[in-house]
View 1 (cartoon, rainbow, N blue to C red):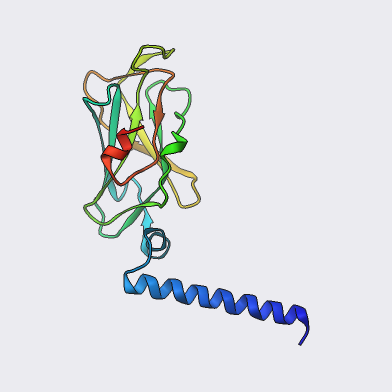
View 2 (view 1 turned 30 degrees about the vertical axis):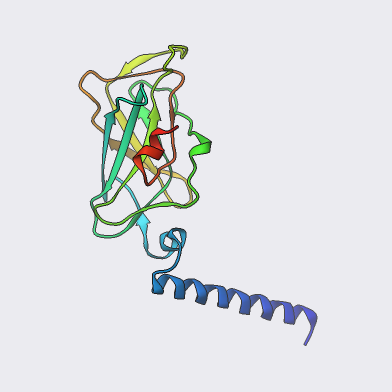
Length: 180
């Protein structure tokens, strides 16, 4: 047997054993959330979720996005939401430090969260205006933004946004989402 043939067979055997171990962990229920997300989950979209937005008392000038899985299967919230506020020229940047260690997965009835820093608390932001509409666009597993977005009701008076506008990644805990 040549060295090349030996290496190919070893690589094939290693890949086969890794796949078998992953399947065994998923079947036993002891696999990680990331493993579950890869093997038995669909992408959360506007079709299988309900998205709401609410202003919060603390921290000031923040909005909490809540995504509830209304489907019958587990879905995964990949990456972060692309936010399209009324008259916005671009999607706000994500707070990189908020990236979770694993994909946020939602069983039917569960919720995931993203925090939105609307404007500078000290008034130092520029280009501010009151937005009355918001669309949220989800990412797929490849972290591409897909679809035209889900329209999300905002308070009747709207929300004030400025150049400080930022969002977090999708997170499993609302307090974690608001800590950024």
